Length: 266
Image 1 (cartoon, rainbow, N blue to C red):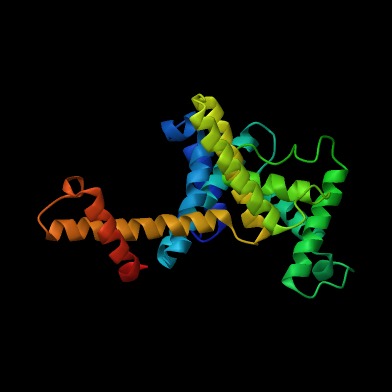
Image 2 (cartoon, one colour; image 1 turned 90 degrees about the vertical axis):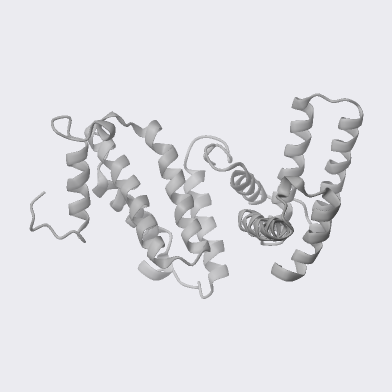
């Protein structure tokens, strides 16, 4: 890469990746990678972007977005080496998709005035595109998605053809029913596989409830995880001030501190 290359230009990053992947003088680790070996890093970087946003770490977000962009460049380079497609094809494909799904902006379509209307229109465009493809309605929901997110997408897709609960209270009733089945299975001495199946049913129903309430279950669970960390931190600090560690505190004592922490840190 020439010294005159503007580091802000995407061509600079593409040139860096070509050099890294060059079997003659490139980086041995980068040369050895393939789509499957890089995929976990791609997922990890996406989560790190989400983490920076959640922390309002805007300098960090810049770096994390760069890391995620590098993953796109890495995959595109490997595809180019196999004569599948290149980075330009990736950009062209998403540009075509965005203009195709926004006819009210880039075409002759009209009538979309709110974000909710656009969401409906977007889903309708995707539905028409899927209708022209082979396979079942749920076949193209990626299996590699986090299980909770995939459950949400499967339910949303099924609901698009009317396969859905017609009211939120019925979903709540179903969650209660599934919880009873877990208790019954455990009381009957069910094996781990059966209990796993029942727990999966509950989680699937909870994802469905979140969808009905228009709540992102991943965001809700992340918030609860953060709340748990805050409150448990109070337990640790309080016990430390009393000259003890967490494993030296009784359950009753920790519960008492926990209740106080709810008012202290939320």
